[in-house]
Length: 270
Length: 234
Image (cartoon, rainbow over all chains, first blue to last red; front, side):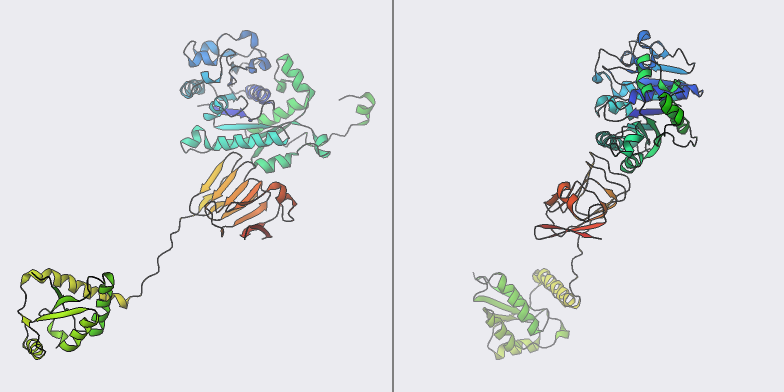
């Protein structure tokens, strides 16, 4: 049986899809058979970030409506053997998702994969609810700013009360915090919430801190998950997060302001 | 036909009879006013001894009961009635047995009752609601008819309600409303007060006022005096 992971946040634009792509790719890189499912019906983006948008024929909604089989709809990643993507429909809306339909697809996927990553849409409505409903673990993506933290908090409340595990009285969903777009410089200036602040407010396990990075935007636009950019700090931070997800004890990096060395200052390199 | 009332004696304690009659008459004073009465002593247990008929009649008269006759079976009672020129009726048959039993039971109950002081009513108490997980924004927890105890943190946007007191042992950043049904004696206890709102019985303070309080962020005890919310250091 696969482990079902939901990447969620409540707030939009914090990096859920980037994270889904990076974590999914990272797991596949480490030899785990992984599928990433886009739950953002009507505003699909995952295929763009994964760079497979031109190969989408059938989507999640087609499978739910029995218009296509799962095998037909799964898109195999060109770079990695173990990685698949199930795209969302662009022409439908979130109401096309039903609990029974999603449950059926998730069940079928968990027979064949080790990890099922559910990329949740923003908000707390149908799409987001169904993305987290079947989850075993949740990665709550949060930016170090008050509104994002508050929305994540709301989402954590829903994870604890509105999921299948909560309804059946099973062990609760394992919640982990992923802090993205972190800028240590702005934290020291007091313009941004620090890791400790967010951890204290949300009171959950910290999976990782992804620094604000030019590499993320570049990777998104090129359709290459940022974790494959091993030179970038964001890519490395995602790599650490995946290792922690797999149970390794990796120290947190990129939390402090990097002092520019003499050479960096002379040549202005970033 | 004349409707008469029969006073059937099951004991020979005049003081007690006085009390009992007084109670009875108080229930319907108009009914008992100058009511014709037959005193029945035929079922009085032997152990109770000889009754003082004159005193008994006087007692009845005091409560407005007018004695017509005595119903008796024993020689002594009949003699006493004759002495007072009171007509004597023969002892009754089985028909009055029921009444006698009821009377006897009442008498027995009365004999027992004063020995035991009345127990004070146990106050009704609902168990406190204890929450041992974080309360997140958007969640609302209500402890009906009792206290609410939260062991985890309470996030901004969360709402705690209780008819009784509220205790929060984690950092408190949400809203707490104690005594929502109007109990002005309800109180709030916070380990770390950074609340959005605190309210007792509808008297509230919002974060804007709370932030200015020197106890902001500390362990506090919130109570109501009059219509002022008191926040003191715990």
